[in-house]
Length: 561
Image 1 (cartoon, rainbow, N blue to C red):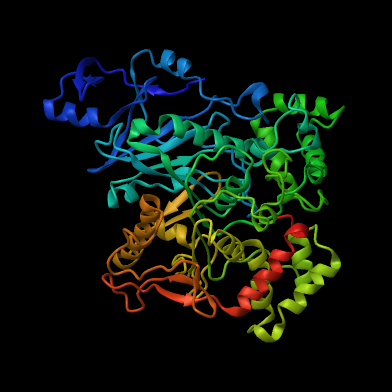
Image 2: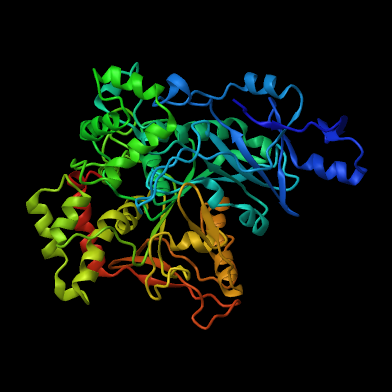
């Protein structure tokens, strides 16, 4: 197995800022100095980064844990063996200028097959200002990508332009195991000799431990770390906030928190059996099945993990996906229940959702809710008809979209925003700028902000992505969003380093002499297409939405979120 690439050019030793580096022979003095500034020495290996802007270096594919291969499949990651890395490098500078292999992908559910990627994928992409070095104490942003815990490739969410805009932070983007490779969970994992619950989530935790130990080499401050994610990445942020483990961060940003069921392990038994049978491992005891699955090829497991979702007539269980579960040790309860009970990390929080994001719709609203949340009783599913009366919506479609959208995504804004308002503070938002490539004017769908914040990206099948050109107005709006985000990373407040044109983003709760107001910012481009004026504004949270989300919060136990 090839762990990394190393430069094979003739080398000569020079000393830059007291550090011994190996630089290609024959370059001019100025070029050698520039190359040396693109090299980071972690103490166990030197990594050559890619100079993506004049003030930005991307160090791509930096390993943070041991490869989870062979018997390590379905188990917690092992800490990186830095001695092995050092010995394998053998004094050479390791090439970190190209994106690494991504983790094995599952199907997006759009009649596509997953299977691309590798299990040897526990790496980070680290973006740092040019010339950053140990002792700079730059605040750190750690990003967990979305994709339903099923798919996603961090190369599709690059941060070079963020550092270029604000060269005073360090950003790390995490590759973690997905689908059955990261979230195969069965009751037998309560005995760790069989496997570990939530391996993909434990990957994320191990990445934070590596960052705690080594991000200083890239100029970062390990005591000033903000975790950030969108969709399943935001669900990951929520899980870290309630996890029973050491606190490895000091702030959190959660974009469109995925509130799909975080089940009990026993709920996963039917999909495990179907998966094992489809992979040719259906015989014998659970231990026999696990042994067979650990010896199966990636292609066999990829087909098997896709099957419950793309062959719904073959799998009739209520829970067809592999995702985080309540393990009773680290994740001790449904995350929204933990938050409502005050059991979470007391750090500042940004949380929000897009205006119109929603979920899959069934013929009736109760059916929609029962399919999405199998734990809901029939009586509770019928209650949604009362809480979401048709008279308050323009159509049956809008009613159903709002009901499932609030339970699956949007109401995390109110549930988390309210809980974190004094722990120590929170800011909430409504993102209201549609993805211009989707052809849905006036409809701001899920992940619309990703298109804006990451160079016009639309993700595709099997780790692919398509970048489309952005207009000057879109670029100016993206920079406004990034300024708020990185202001929060730098100071714990999105307003400290916001752009001058941008409105003050008020905290979620504003308490007056006789009442309490819930405010949020609405993000959108200037309606007259100005690049120098902000289109964003502050609004009061609608009382009807607050009431609905209070009802949604009351169903967290049944919705298992």
